[in-house]
Length: 494
Image 1 (cartoon, rainbow, N blue to C red):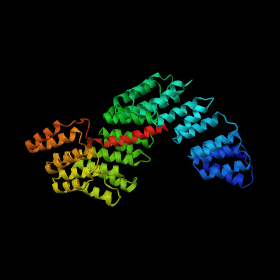
Image 2 (cartoon, helix red, strand yellow):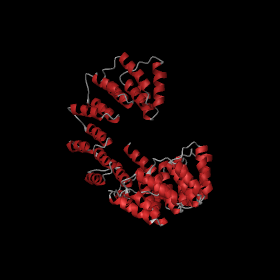
Image 3 (cartoon, one colour):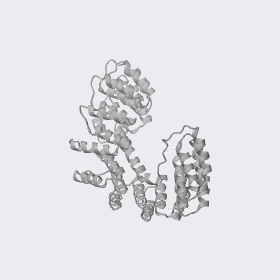
Image 4 (tube, rainbow, N blue to C red):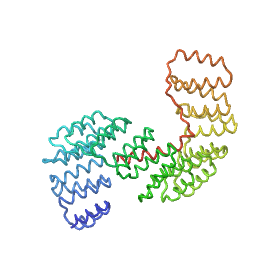
């Protein structure tokens, strides 16, 4: 009876209730546990991650003489593995006179999930009998470390495969952005599930193949597969990147027609799509209906207003966030500064830059300094801009220096432009872009002798032309969408 009650707690996902019942109704009242009790309690301790409680239960296992029971032993192999104590799990494993397939699989799974792939392979190679779980565990281990050659070797040797086997391989190629191999395995699958489609959708998104993402989504819906929240997050993000408002509206209608109630992640993807497409009224409508809002949700709204020139509304949204939202982070202030920059709100930007450091103790990053330099440059404040430039750390991302140089050139601030171009050359001496930026600075000032000297210097250099400076201004919504997309991928892989 007691075991049945404990199991009911476990079945309704109340491990603490099960543990409380174990102590209050069994241990406290001298109700003796049996070989059905201990596996239940071991599972509870694993679920709540309590190593101490599990060790206490294990001590009782030994005290009552159940350490040789196969069912009990397997439960403690799993418990110690979940708690990251693979050496203890191995001790339980090695002390067993009788082992079954569950024992071997639990040990392999424990090693794989704790990153000890070599030990997992040793156990795998010792096994006389393997099932589909054994093979899939090892393949997922190799996928996790990016060793697709070893994963492919095991996959080819499998006597039989299920949809999890195929999904593992597709996920592995997706992790290394090998689109062609992932698509090849997807096409060869005898049976697919929604996870198969989601992995491909997320892959096309990561590789910026947004049109392919939408094409795959159309195939998915046309093939009688019902997309889930992860599918919809991917397709909405693709719509946002391509600014396909009509397609995004169709997805929103699909959600309503099929009774899909968006969670926080999906709602954020939806409002980001509307924001990036310029439909801020619709974005605000989605935002207002969200029962819970993450910092990414707030940031997306601020970015949306800012990037479309509604600086006042962006700052109003930030003030609402301060009053009743989550704590602003560095990305929030990047959004605010960008909004000020787009709307020419120079002194507002300066004030919020100071607020970030003074009130919220957020250390400004190079990107924040870059925004501020751009703001001050817009106002023609040459001296403060140069001062900020010199205070910014020397070893920073190349995108910052490119932005700073663009700001100086755009506002006819020549001397810092030359300084920044030369700084880029020091940081990236083998890239062609810094030299081109310096040359353009000289040309803008009519310094033809310097242009010729630079050209002669370049004659003896082998330069890489693949360095690209990304625009900070047009990437803000993309960064918010990228945060949604990684969660989505993690959720797929979980």
